Image (cartoon, rainbow, N blue to C red; front, side, top):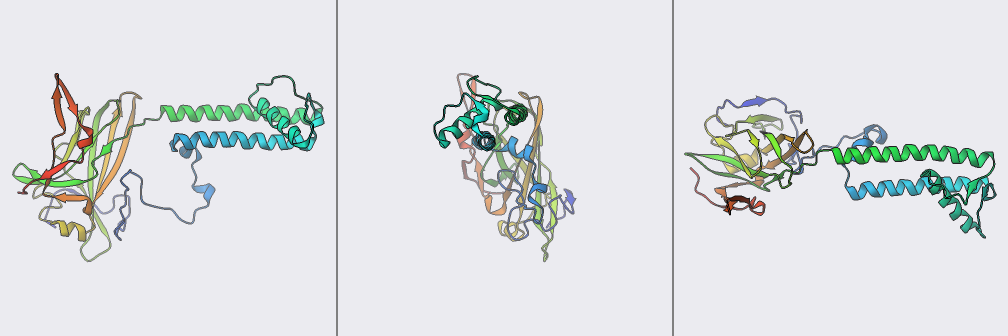
Length: 310
């Protein structure tokens, strides 16, 4: 590897042996390809994070399932106490009586209470009082989770599926493209690109912070091509495609910006492995003009054409 002045790290926080067997340390979607073992299930869980970040379909499924299970439990308790302790029940058999207890539980936990069925006696009233309190807590928690999900910045940066080594002025450059496909505006967008490579004759790795043509833009309404000039200071200067494959190279991307809609900072991550790097190609221009407006064709984010390297 050529002598270079890029900032070098002995460890990037991923461990010197990260992805040393051909596995990427950072997945394309920004999640870390790391599993923590031998930790008790409850100890490693962050339920708030899980509920706020899971898919909407899973979230509502969890809420509905929890609501059903809680009502099922309290209906069973009312049945054990005896449905005769609930006035106004009209069930003629055990199943109908259980269903009346179930729907009474649903009315109690939501503090709705139609009035036909009511608890009678101390045990039933105690259970109903406890259930109504739990209902208030349950819906307060659900409301807080909904607010957390809606208030959380939801910025999805779209990265090109491949990176390229393309001509750049009188040298070559490592390039990839990003775009914000959403309508929200991002300000003060800053990006960092680092390189992880195996050391010669070793399973340990070196990490380098790559110098970029431009690492920060004030506005991000269009598509941005990130460029690392491969000059004499670059850690990949004079390295071939085969060299990067043998060194199990991984380019790690970290983006941070300010979301104008939520007034909160947002972060995004991705990575490119050496086999996702296409040599002798350049990205096709994806911006056109129509009636005085710039049109960004997001579908062309991966489109390239052949280019002769310098």
